[in-house]
Image: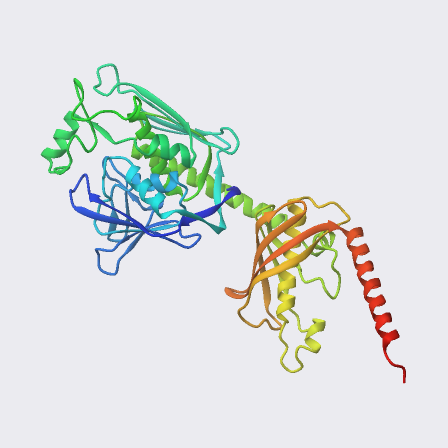
Length: 467
């Protein structure tokens, strides 16, 4: 995993889509609901006892012809790819998808109906960051005539390309499509592309009792003379739909991708194989990053180089993790020898809430200093503290885990959200706003303030009656 580039997103409101399944023909209602950060995409079978949930992850995929099926225990959801493509294409990262049948609605064979539903609901950002895997080396998957390859691409982009060619005698003509993935591109150029098959394949499915409610008007069926009972939305619609399927299948990874992915004659099975290879790569890279973070953890000497605070007001002992412009995790070991315990309170030592907040603010100061590479002579001063909540007392022997996340860090100001925990229990949380100033300017301002206060005091004393 690499540094997160954007915040996670979910829906502002619930929304639904109704239709019938292409394969099994059952009527189905699918409802998209907002979900908490870190949830991912989770399907809930509301038609089954206890409403079992099936997470949309690559390790939940089970073999299924011409579609992507996921399973958790005895609960399964079929034909998820168009739903997942809509969510991934519109960058909805956390969503509970309630469904009252085994199969997602086929609609018109594309993701258009799902995108329209997501547009009606609206999308909102969340506090946590979305993970991203930057493709730094090539990965190639080959299965027969199908190939899909992933590798480095333009920085900050995900580009998907597909070349469709079933040979000179095929009823579906060769075509190609390539696009940089953005919500606007997905919505305007990819979401409306429909699934397709040959007339022979359609006849075989119907003979097996599959797709009996699906007609040529619902999707694209190609005969030897061309498209049957429908018309193309794009000349390269079949290649665009293959890109749509790739987006949906790769969404099972649960994180963003940056790089270039090129496919030829590939399908769901090849997409799943690529996703598994990329997951293995990201897991190995995450292990390397964890080891690197541990080796680069900031000890107290490093903390003192970044913060101007000293005893008895240095309230950060060690930094465990830091990602500039992202987050920082530090610890404060709370000892009975802390000077404030002598008076707060004798016989019942409790760490003052304001000092818990100060610990978080100092951790935020470290994150700010590392993000903007703060030069000597500049300091971050608290301008305001909002949304303060003190959840539990902190006592001698506790270790405070201080977690702060950037909301906005600039050279002159910053906004950071922080949480302090003891084990898994939340002790305090708040949002901090800072102004970043030259220390000389701060000193001069304080000096002027002191002189002004002394002047007011002297004038008040002069006016007071003498006894």
